[in-house]
Length: 297
Image (cartoon, rainbow, N blue to C red; front, side):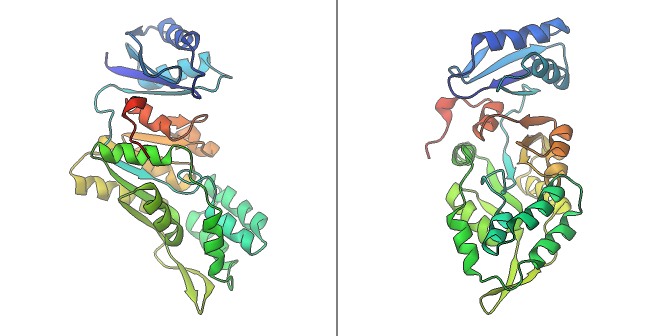
């Protein structure tokens, strides 16, 4: 079979009835299917198929499973395991927007979060919105960043995703429109090989209200994906990019497996693959990893 449809549900919640519904939906529009391969009992299954394009299979299965907490990803069967991972940080590898949480230390979280929301949904220029938000933090003691870090939590599945891909030879990079203070800590905690982000400028123990130029934004994320792929001597088809905001969209669309993760509407609508229900472990199942292969963390 040329393609694989992967279904993932919360642990213990994926039934054979759900699998059969997806299979029947594909058959109804002309697909032929193979023997299901369970990657994790009652959690993740691969359904080989042919006779349809991946986007057709994806749409048919999603329609059949509407209302169920099941993630659906259809891909070509060849080259599923990627050799480069590029991941956004905020609301992807960590559960929060660190700039919004930092603004909470200044008592202006709601004001800054409103701008963040618009920027992440593509309504505002990312670079301009970042400068505006950082300017509102002028004079904030740098200790506020440490307090924000103490309250930052990893996204479920983050460590397993990176550890498993590393164990199988992939290069893993954290590429964020956020700040080095946080990306450095997240990269070390999760196990990324490297991190790329922006730098908040400070003077005499307080934020200056400025960010170092040039700003790492949407174009820079795509450029980083292409540069790291070239350094690894691989094509973009061998890469995985994941993120949730509009500044992630170019790299998501360019990667061989580009995933909109619990993403803003503009990103979810434009990405070829999306995760709406599960955690980051879904990205491993989408690559054909079995739960028994996940690296211990």
